[in-house]
Length: 278
Length: 311
Image (cartoon, rainbow over all chains, first blue to last red; front, side, top):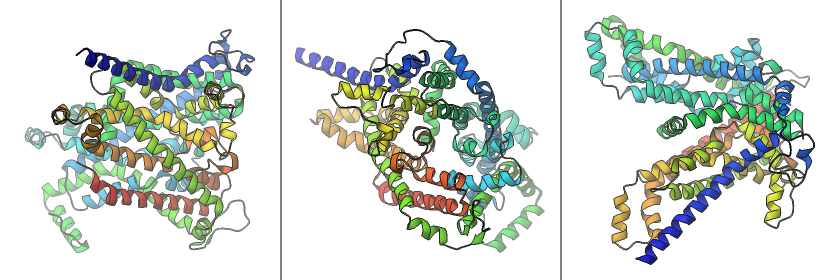
């Protein structure tokens, strides 16, 4: 009896030790980011690096902010990610509704076309898309970062699956009451689907927020860059100015981390849910 | 009932147009599909066709020749090219190290987290932190930590009694360094997924096994692992596809493909060929080869591995 509970306690202690060790590994880079961001220009070159900065240099943040226009990068990223997310969810909801509820000749062929777009990797389409953008004179513009992404077959399938769980009787009842299709979608279907829409919206927003290779290819001028690309150029430019580089990284990471701590459960659950569903 | 064949289709179409209710369905269907269908056709399907045509042409902005059709020329160039094979090797090396490590580590941590344990949501938050933060930002932090003179990585080595390394500048270590970052970043996600999987295994299986005298090892192999196989399969498939697409962290950590091109993966090669060398035909062909490899692997998984997954 005594041996058993002692063994349990030891196992539990060991478990926590391993979990804490894993936690430390996960957070150490963030600790260095924060620590270095406040250091003075000389202190970053001390070896071994000091954990706590000798003096706090708040001006690193304004220096980083002014070195490249982070404000502008944030605006670009927000504008593009929000626009793309809203449009994708909206167009995909319409498509998902059709695939779930409306039959007509040729629908299945169109469905397969949507499937095909999911199979093709973006690495194949990025070069021709670039050439198309060049023809349209859309290089280095907002349109180029938004228009090609106004639709998403993935979201369409996700919502199709969700819509098929909504009972047909609901729509029939609405029809009997004289409610047209459009009004049904707008007034009944979409409000009912709010959790699914929110999940997929968040997932999509995050994906687009972090989008890297396309903005990299399509932007030339600083003022059009999105946050990941702007930060990357800053990293290249700042070379070994690690304190400024870490300050910039902090500026990039802070809002998302803050949001995360506030809305953890929704974050994790929505990402896990959309991930598993596919 | 949808009949097959083109004649059938036209007949059905005519049929639908004549009957008001069916016509309504047809109109509604087409109208609601139109926005997304047009975008997908114009910006996904059309580019794929263009890429195919490009891959059969020679088009290099920096050369004096114009565009010309060369059939399989790009493909034969690539499959006999040492540099391209290097990128395939690097890409496979990346996946071959990262994926097993990812699965083993995340399963291990998920198992430790499973069961009533204090601080579950605290651990979950911490582990998820790398997942949601910007890849560029964390890659910048790791680039700093890997700095041979000022970074933390060599400090850790000193604690372990090993001499300092040049990490991202060492041809033998550069790829491992990159893999470490990718692993660190993605582990939290897989931990959450495994945790969900573990929590869906009914406890009574374990209790029944205990009654039959099974030890922890047997419980794992006979209950946990088989019942988790759908999750493992999912993680495995997603990881393989993603490992072929890895780009941003490599572009931040080792923008030029690393020492002796040891971290140049396929996407980096495609990017360089298209947007730095401006050899469009060759880049398109390389992208299609990437596509073909991913498809082959996916098919292999679906035919050979999936049947062995317990559902």
